[in-house]
Length: 135
Image (cartoon, rainbow, N blue to C red; front, side, top):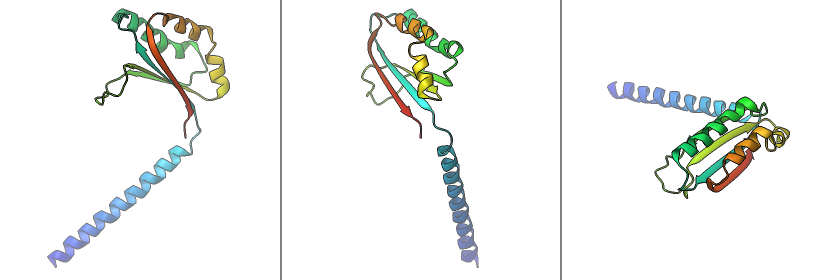
């Protein structure tokens, strides 16, 4: 009888896990059917000669763009902290979200974006830009 109860308990746990797994799949499917967004990722590798004050000024200028350019729907940024050592010297990642390619087309030549780009002069060793539609 004791073994039967243990087996019944294990079966109930397994059924609960399968049910939760199916719920998670449904949640993932719901997220995937949400409206797509255009993601604009910018990675910077700065020159060693750039001071921390220079980098702070650049960071602050990029962070200010969403308040100046209405086409930016979402924004986040961060500093690399990967332990893998595959960053190739890139330290800063900026992640900008747009609803459309037209919004991105407005953003790129926007005077506030161009003012930010001008701040980069003399400080950027390399830059990588990648845009994609979220799925």
